[in-house]
Image (cartoon, rainbow, N blue to C red; front, side, top):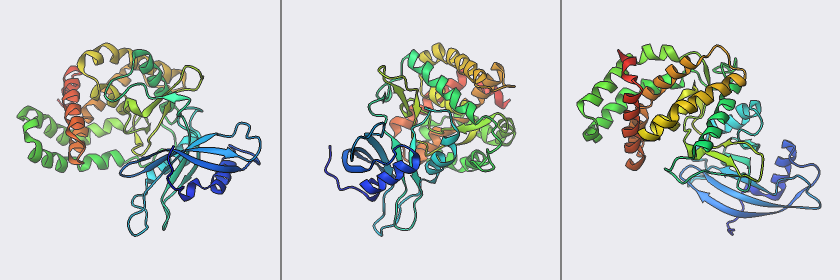
Length: 349
């Protein structure tokens, strides 16, 4: 445990009101708050808080996670994290139970107050399967892709997409600026971009408008950073499901972008060749079980190949955003191998 001073959202009175509004507690009051752990990152500060109550607490949470932003030197929010706030406010309530952490409170940044999220604490009930970059076991991967199917199905071609939830043009706008980022990256990292690769990128940039025409249907909410370490697996002692965390990059897109990110970009060829197709089969079967129709296995495979092709843009963006080379360079080499294995270049012919 730490002795850090409590921020305002961790005040006992505030927590009592927030938990009551969310229905997590009745008339009981939080009497004492202790910071069990504290993790500061560039854009956020995450605390695990132990809660004591006045009188019998019943099912009231004994601990919660407070994720909050920073204030700059002038006392103003240094970032807004509006995407993750919007996710827990607008999207999470419409999801199946036990797919993401329960959110007790989501507050936007305003004036001299940083944004914050008050979330269910999964520390004792769940775990992350492996230490990065080791992949989960096959059984764990099966649980994760089935959970993704349940998540994606809940928002599949939902009428609110691009209307009251998300921006349907965000991916197009991202790709619109890619040509400039690619040119800058070749100036800095030209050694990793031989002529053959540059040709592939140039053809992708040229044909982006045509390819985007294939991605305006079968849309859903996607995570945008769906690596295996954003997945919490249930511990054997409980019956909870897989939970997905860190929703700062969600957007509207094709579900296979999440799947291709997990497998095509993060796995080396031997593992991917053994496990990719069976996991896609399992994902598709779960989609059908969850009510998705008019989307056959061939369509899933076609979307997966196109998603793998789009993902060659990700390592370039990571490099230009100063992500460490141990991340973006390995991602670049793996996704290029996947593009060749999956015949993705044929999509540009």
